Amino acid sequence: MTALIDSHCHLADPKLSADVDALLDRALQAGVGTIVSVGAIGTIETDRLTVEIAESHPNVFAVIGVHPHDASAADTARLAALRELARSREVVALGESGLDFHYMHSPAEAQEAALRRHLELAGELGLPIVIHCRDAEAKLVEIIGEVGIPEAGGVIHCFTGDITAARQFVRMGFHISFSGILTFKSADALREAARDVPEDRLMVETDAPFLAPEPYRGKRNEPAFVVKTLERLADLRGVEPAQMAVITASNTRRLFRIPEPPA
Ligand SMILES: [Zn+2]
Ligand SMILES: [Zn+2]
Image 1 (tube, rainbow, N blue to C red):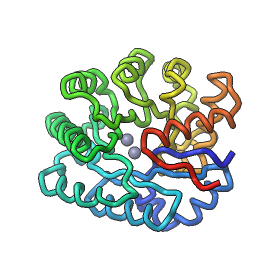
Image 2: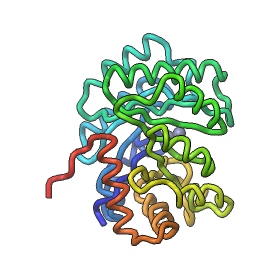
Image 3: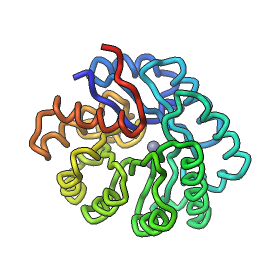
Image 4: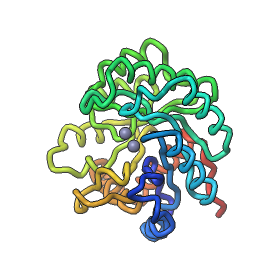
């Protein structure tokens, strides 16, 4: 099952960055052959390190941006630095940007302004957008309805909404990525949404080092654990895990324009 892709983790996070080669080995052994690593948390140095890691590992790709928690930092200088970094061929998308009204680490207006800037830059660079959305589905639908999804598309990463929100995002053209939350006991509404999303929009991720799936809940998460989320998704949809690995990997490759690895 080496086809599997972890479509969203944070290899530059200090909890993972010292350990990247061992993590990638374990991922490969678990069948996770390709990894999309997101910077965005903290300063531009996180994005820089994310691109560096991608450049030194052929099966790792980078996403750069400003996390909604740090939205106030998404000023003109940061955007210019991102535009420069995005020249690397390893950069496959912009983000994660979006709205987090659950934690509210940045004021809502700053988050909204940063999101609009990311959408504009994604359009300019011809890149898809990776969206983080927590307790803000209605506002996100409003903004996307107004400015539109980038031409290269986008994904709602670590989707936590219900079936209604999932359908709205799918109608707008988004992919929907499921994290370890899918395995949590209380996540029945999320599992209902996961059964409903069209097959050609499904993706899976760890969001490591955060949100480890059952049975690792509470531990440090890592890309190899995406298998647990994949298995749960396959079970919910009544398909074999190997087939679900192929489905989610080919959706991820199409969105991020990641070529098939050499046979
Ligand atoms: Zn996120
Ligand atoms: Zn993330």
